[in-house]
Amino acid sequence: MTGAVRESVIVHVPALREKPEDIELLVKFFQDEFNKKKQQKYQKQFRISTVSEMQKQLWPTNVRGLQNAVIQMMTNCETDIIDPSDFKNYLLKTQLGNWYAFRSGFKMA
Image 1 (cartoon, rainbow, N blue to C red):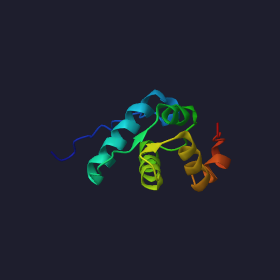
Image 2 (spheres, rainbow, N blue to C red; image 1 turned 180 degrees about the horizontal axis):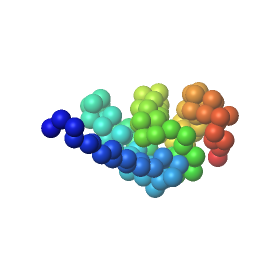
Image 3 (cartoon, helix red, strand yellow; image 1 turned 30 degrees about the vertical axis):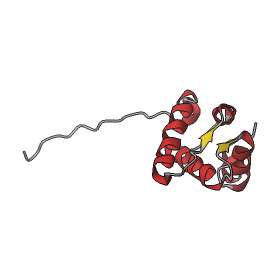
């Protein structure tokens, strides 16, 4: 097949800030994956209020950024429940909460 013309396919994947309703499902998925890998007696979970706070943010990153946030919060949280305060602490300690905040108008609700 020499000389065949290949068409490019462009797929638009909306940013998290465009689809905040997806955040809840993604957090649940990443949470379950983390818990499967760790196989701890007590499974870590996000409070609904934490996920609500996460949905209010204008995420400047993609799904991988959300996955990293979930993993870091679950790893660093000393309890089995991730509270909104854990999310705010994550924002304060990371590039997401510092550099991106300045760069993209990321608001800490």
